[in-house]
Image (cartoon, rainbow, N blue to C red; front, side):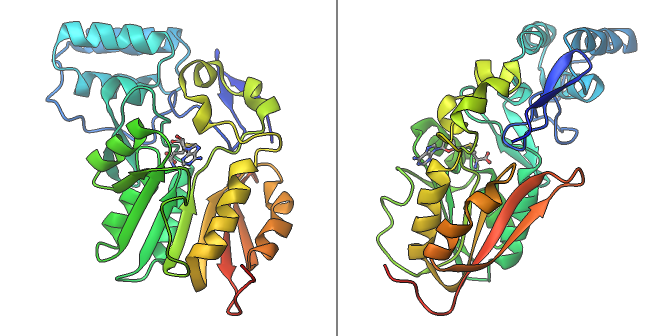
Length: 296
Ligand SMILES: C[S@@+](CC[C@H](N)C(=O)[O-])C[C@H]1O[C@@H](n2cnc3c(N)ncnc32)[C@H](O)[C@@H]1O
């Protein structure tokens, strides 16, 4: 895992595990409200306050706050919350992911822009009328994208946090509250399994940006000693749930693709295909179930 670096006055993660997208909105928003009318000078004042608070994308964030706040009092409250470091999406209640506006509520992990790659790859592997399960669905970002891209498919999102499942349902995801695959009894019926699970090693949580540590739930971040405790369980579950030819897509960081190789082979996966971002950081891995079935 790669630790953190300083950008401006705000610390921004360069670990693939939890970059501070709360400080860097994925894209400009069209808020659900008509927005508060302000003079150009007042709008500039909002930008300046955000910059002074260390926001690296102050202009974009100002646009979002101005577009989303229904009146001046709301704008003032929102600005104060953002200055304290609270994730922008918790404040505005919305976030763009893969071109779609999603509901987000305080207390839940904010979907990261780098997870869009996983969602797009998974959508390309999910056939019409296919079946997919999105473990650790959170607010349902990946599952919502699969639903939009392959509307004939049956997609289930699962999260252990009831608040996440409720939010995912608001985002039109059929979401269950459960510990990973516990409610899924049918073997070899899924075409695609996706997971953006917690994968930060416990000892590296302290390296995450201060705002992430302060606000986002530990259950969404802590992957145990080597970061792969939940991921290994997901690999084993996917080996059981996917039919031969099905695909697992999972978000990873650092050198976790290598650490996961033996678990993937033991669960019947071949041809693991990691992918990296433009900076050369590992972002995820796709693995294919071999035609011959592994021993269960
Ligand atoms: C890193 S967040 C990712 C959320 C979502 N996939 C996304 O990309 O926005 C991890 C999620 O895993 C959930 N989670 C943690 N342990 C879990 C478990 N044992 N079973 C199901 N979900 C779990 C957390 O509640 C959290 O919502």
